[in-house]
Image (cartoon, rainbow over all chains, first blue to last red; front, side, top):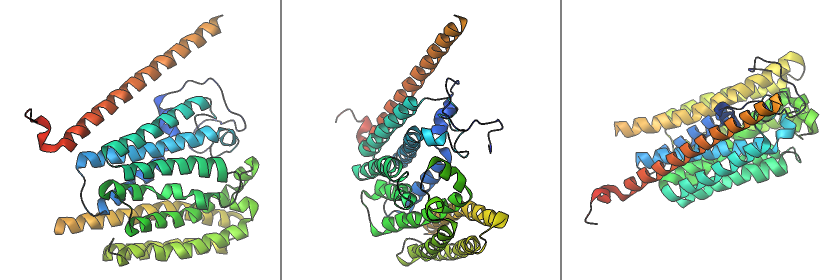
Length: 310
Length: 50
């Protein structure tokens, strides 16, 4: 199992192993959290207006912990299928280091406290958006769509798209066209990102009966849909410049990164068999993470540079 | 018998660690609210006349 260094038994939930703080951190899906906090920070920085730095840090902390709580609740609910998938069998619950009840309590308490903290100390628009995000991820994606429809990550992906909107609302107290555009960029990015992963993890999802697109509709249809979503995503990512949210540097970066994204999506469409097909899917998946990170990084850096120069 | 005692010891250790973590988290939350309240009250926070 990648990254664990030990033989991981796949198939059943383990019992009775000793837990540590690291296991609770793992419950919160720290890699997802880092992307969440970064996109929320970008939303906060590019929003018009100002926020006291202490309140800004509190907002980011609350958003991060809310995201982590969602991850813990997802691991609580999906413990049964996590135990049977190679990708997730090393998670704390399948390994027996934490029980499902512990994950549920941890996630529930963090959810409530993160929303209350954000609402009381920053504003209730941001608090409400965080509550909606957590509820959407748990009830709509994890408990309803994930095991029922191949459109699970299309609709469920909205949960991951909310953080920049929450960051924006933390500063402005409102939702606006600009924050909706930031939401839409991540929303349209989510399907090609996850379907690229699903293409080379198809057997894992098939084993546990999760109806990811490659399992239900086959790899060919999945490649086609990855291509279509990429064709929508890349021009959408240019929109911030045209609505005054970003400048020329962002436009150039988004165009360059978008070209690479389209190239890799085209390769996924072109190579349909064997190791080349797997490599194409892995490359797109890996690049998609870098793509989103760099888009937001350039937007953030450009905004800060323009403020500093003004 | 020995394994029961070991299990009980482990359970108590886990419970102590959990209690400590909860206490620290609650303390951090109190500190957070206190600091944020001072920030939100702004310049008047240390003015006893108000």
